[in-house]
Image (tube, rainbow, N blue to C red):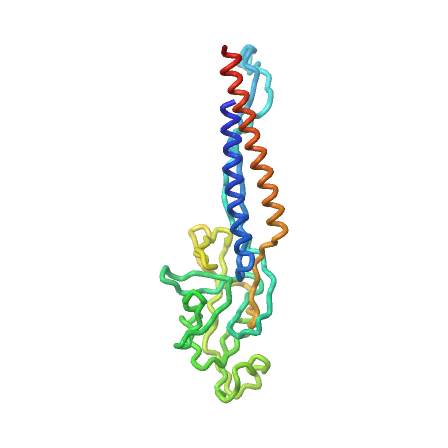
Length: 278
């Protein structure tokens, strides 16, 4: 009975952790490029159950054998194995803003933070008074040559991530997107976005503000096989509200079942002590 109480308690603890992940997913459903978290459980080691009122060992010429009949297995509880991020592609939303970028497929933008280089799928960038391309948190966006500086705001970014500036400053920046780069009087590639990928993106760690950091298990940043940058679009989160609400209901039912299991074991233990023992 004591073991049953511990088993039910472990189930309640695991369901609470899953509920926290679901609540975090729902809270960030409108956050650009947010990736949902999934909770994975694993069971404690199972115990083999045998009848103990039979003789334990039989002797034969070749040795000995166990005579206790095998009854079955007894589960001893569950625990959270990991909470991993599902990097499924989110839908692209048109914004018509030249500073908004989205990645279609694999890859991460690289940004410079006070804690070192970090990575993000959130391409809602802006430009400061010094012409530096930055995130809304104030972190500079990195190109292959370092911090990206766009002096005159007359630029486009093609699918390969190349930042192309037009030397003709008489043109309106909004006209550049509708123009083919071949029509520019003096197109110049000033840099290329530093877009990276990882051998095992499942092992990346979230740091908040849509930033990720590498770990020893994710491996170092690598150039992605295929790069496709879309200017004027943002990637939406991959959280499905209906799916998360259904999962929340399932968690609630599982939590209540474990709670009732503990109550039943507690009542049975009380009767054993107060009535049978008497």
